[in-house]
Length: 277
Image 1: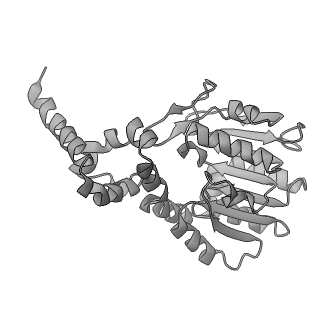
Image 2: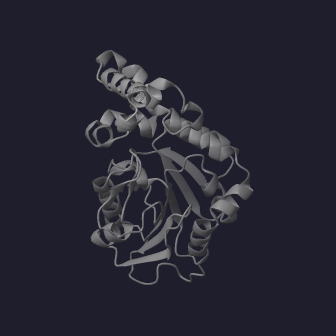
Image 3: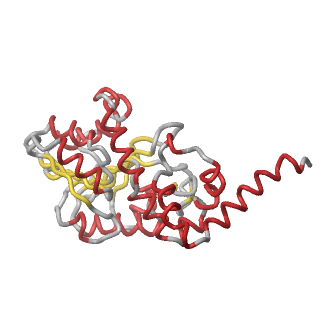
């Protein structure tokens, strides 16, 4: 074993572990955690030193302040900027199947109030709102800066609004009274209990359908598995059925670079009026 090769790495991780526990380091620590998912910030020995530890189960499951930093920090605003800067063709190609599922439902007249959770830059909603001007659309996100930018960017779109909401808070999104909820890569950042609670509350609130486009390992293990330190692969089939949704249909199985596309229906009928997917 080449000790000289592993010693510097061990010293860096040990140093990061020690710094991590210093109370005086809390401000800078949260600064780094808030930028955890921005590519431009994945540099520097300090970040590399304790990234694995901070993103582990201890930081994510036992230290709520770190999860808060990840979900509400600078990373949210930068992701919103990234998505907002992409041309519309980016969405039409990369989000073609979930957008098609949403459009199919809206065209049927089965929905009038469409809510997207974790809307980031709001581009998907803006596309749908422009195509269905007679319907109401709302995007919620926990990042207040992203919501403010969306409110400015789409102020002229009368049937589209944006609100700050925390999915773990019972009244932060149900008060808009949506009949369809759409999520694309949002629920993966919640724990299994939080996702189960959200899906259950959506059912109790009278939501007619859930359209979920989320990463998962497809194993149907009936429990969540960590995929990286700050995200989970949930078994959405199991969680939706457990919450009382009578019809849970998979439109697309997970594949490399493809998320699970699932629709849960309240009335027990087909998930979508007519599915071509």
